[in-house]
Image (cartoon, rainbow, N blue to C red):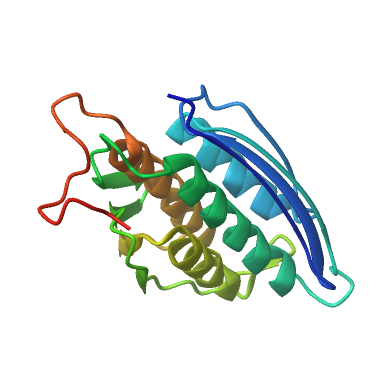
Length: 196
């Protein structure tokens, strides 16, 4: 089974190419033009064992909003494409990730029904050159373009870098579990017989 995706998306605001292998080893080559976002997405790939290449040219002379949001959109599209008909996947995944004083919960249902429940208390405006309010926009874009039910909840923590990094790592671990193949599952894990 070849669970890969290749996406290109070009608008007046961003030009993005992305390649994803869900069954990789965590090799990542990320170039968004935003150092903090690169670091977070590299952590996502590493801890989820996803091979991921992203090249982004964005209108960073405006701000980082379009680049962050559109990167999330394309990553979500790639996840959806790589999962194809979702045959044999576990569908559900969750992870409670500690990082020093921080604790973050992430839970996923690859149901085809997009929804984001994001609960975090970030207390600074920026991490590097990335606005912290865009963390939610990134995960919103992924959840809606991938068609996933995504819950991310900060349980504890006060260091903003730790909180956001724990979110990306918890998301990686939960997605790795949810997208994993279980040989006991015949077809898709749904009484309806389909997961759209």
